[in-house]
Length: 69
Image (cartoon, rainbow, N blue to C red):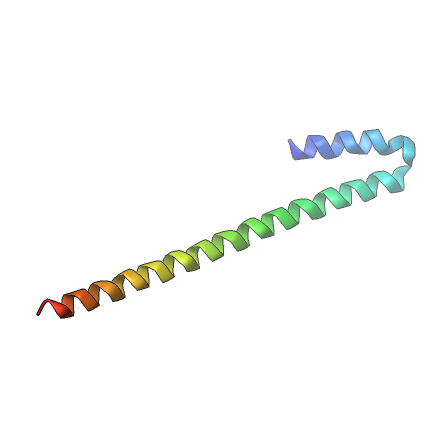
């Protein structure tokens, strides 16, 4: 779908010159890459949060197990 949009944008900008079309295609490619990197960063942050929560739960469990003895 994104390739279609880039292709249509290239055709649309053809009247403005090849340089403009290539600039638009480059900008679209950069935005796509930025979005993918942002998604990757968000997934990594979520994994770290999940690990921290799990460690806190384990610590709390150990603390409550020690108090019952």
